[in-house]
Image 1 (cartoon, helix red, strand yellow):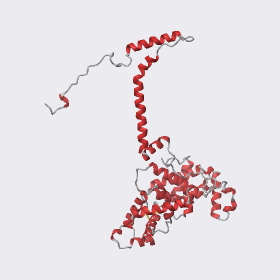
Image 2: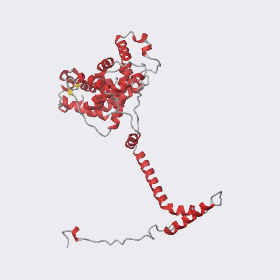
Image 3: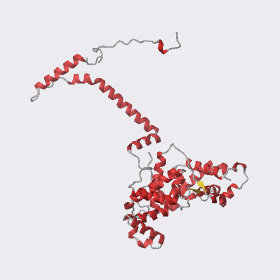
Length: 220
Length: 153
């Protein structure tokens, strides 16, 4: 059995020491400083501080889990459990990375383990598209082509796209989600996945190839 | 290999669609409340996606590697066969091993007893013979009842 490759408590940068003890590195970024303060307070049991951290990162964590599972209910459960686990394990957070990256890794680990458990079950419970989808320049350009094979509506495209995503392996799906959907850099993805940038690039290339093949009828 | 250099523009345009998938209205207002409530209730967050127990690891290994399932089945069958063979040989084995041992300190009386037990058991159960040969047997005669074949004559 293949275990999830990411470890929750390992410092991502490989550096030892606590970010709390390295204020010089974090003073330049007020948001980072505020995050460190919130983490410090949360470690001391301040629930309000942790609540703020949850509010700050919930959308991104949820989105990643949702795009990995293509299921709202699963994404809801996993997001909640990732933040709960984050709170429980806060004392082991060494500050080698940002709290955001750390909690992201918890969520990703949980999601990958969950997907392995539900390996033979594929059911999608897709979220609705927001109103702006019809006006997205990328999508307008894609759909406006008069090719009869692409007369599909956005909902059908959404289903087909998610179907294609589910055909990718977890690491490949994760790379596409983090880079092409959420816009993270290769470096950030490498930190989250605990691999080098070359691996991220090659996985991204392979995943895109697979998706492009699967969605050929819907692409120009 | 640079993924940016390849022509994936259409695919990236299509992937933009995923950014527009949004959860039900008000979801992100409720989520922090639910999380904090579960933390206060002492929830550990280990229900989903937790590390597998040993049993789940075993089952998952079968899922991933069928050869492992086959090997496991072979081992179980071999153990079962050995167990059955051992249990069949046990009376004869007991008789064979119940030979008198040499006189040891205080062991004469006990070795005699062992021989007696062995000889009595060998009378009732012939070594290497049919275990049921000395037992009363039931004569079973097949009975064909017409009640089972209501349509037959």
